[in-house]
Image 1 (spheres, helix red, strand yellow):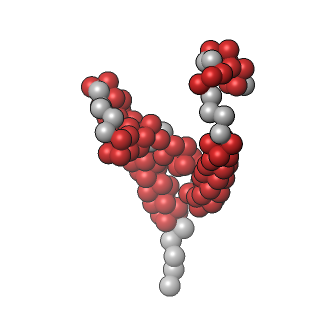
Image 2 (cartoon, rainbow, N blue to C red):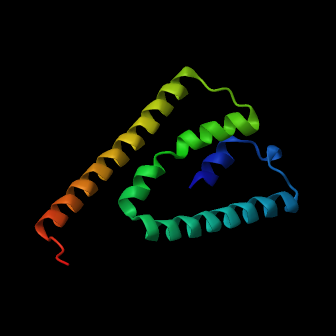
Image 3 (cartoon, helix red, strand yellow):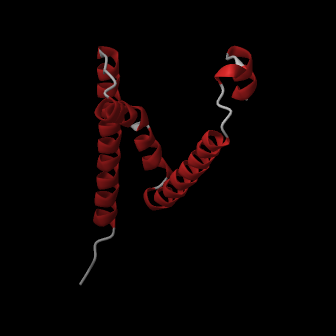
Length: 116
């Protein structure tokens, strides 16, 4: 979907004519996407969709931190505020889920006492 827009917006003389560059692009994209997809699906089975969706919100925060650490990309005040909101939201959501699980397990243990 993006290719027609890119061809209209950017002149073709800026596109690399080298086959190795295109092969590296496709191999990297397919390989990384495939590996990430396999890891995501495996972990999704283990932690469940609800918890995984909460932690998916950390992706922009991790990208910002890695961009700063590896590339030296400057971090703006808006990004810091957004990071605080993202991390705060994830902590709040996981804490609320933990409290609900504890409350449900406590009710279950009170209604079904184990007799020895």
